[in-house]
Length: 140
Image (cartoon, rainbow, N blue to C red; front, side, top):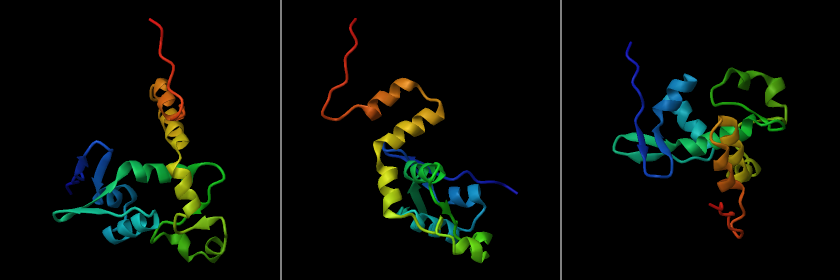
């Protein structure tokens, strides 16, 4: 069996990845992958015969979902959707709420993500510096 690496496009705003990426990572069908994007409020972009999505946007939402205090998320087609105790529990959601989308769009989340990834800490200044206050220049 040959595994095909999903296509990636980059226009400067982060990677657009073929929907097949979600199929392979989560071992789900294309239909479930498209339902997942719909639940995350991410619309795919169709180029030719392929569908792409913004990987950075997807990662931000996944990061917010994994933070302490965030609700549990039931993926499309998961076995837990058949468990009445879980589906009746208000701490589990099947679609990203507007509050979570607002939280994911906060620049502080990018700073937190950068900190968790072990990248250069200097990059954090770009995310936490107020737009109306310029960064201090280094004296040489």
